[in-house]
Image 1 (spheres, rainbow, N blue to C red):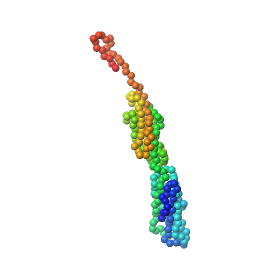
Image 2 (cartoon, rainbow, N blue to C red):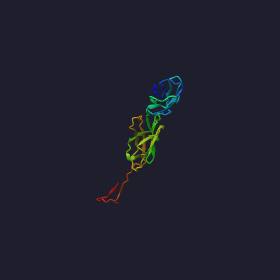
Image 3 (tube, one colour):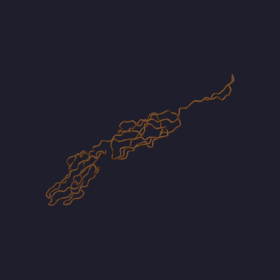
Image 4 (cartoon, one colour):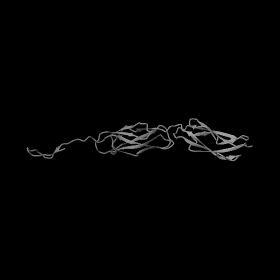
Length: 232
């Protein structure tokens, strides 16, 4: 049976008790099996077996939550009977508890590796989590501002941050289109609910000069009353 709890990662605990149907003349040893979604970094146990002394009918151990600093969400912990020496197993052979995570789901911020990028060059779009997660985090991004889709390519449409890490990147490649457009703004945001609202702002620098105008004529000497063509 279980008493106490919930087992919070901030030091919450629960007691797991094994009870005999009647006393034994010798010690009863119960080897336990720990399972569920939680692993050994999420809790500590005072023992891995329960010993019920001769003449007694109960024995117990205590499980205490451990703050591992990683977002996992709440997880189940099962404590079951693996083997019994001095008695036979009967009745309930497994109990389940919940370990309450100390971390909330991480938020993320967006930033760039440079304040500007020239046509033909690239920069990194960086997503940084407020804390690590035990699963990979996939972040969708959206590019706006003055730029159009023909002005750039992305190495991926999403940023993937591996489990246990806090940052990931995609490459923003500015296209060299040989068209004078002037410098253009690049704004990167995300539709994700965990985005902290920190819009990435950069400048795409045009490397094509402003066009010049040249006048020329094709008519040679211009006679009064004659027609000459002027080319622009």
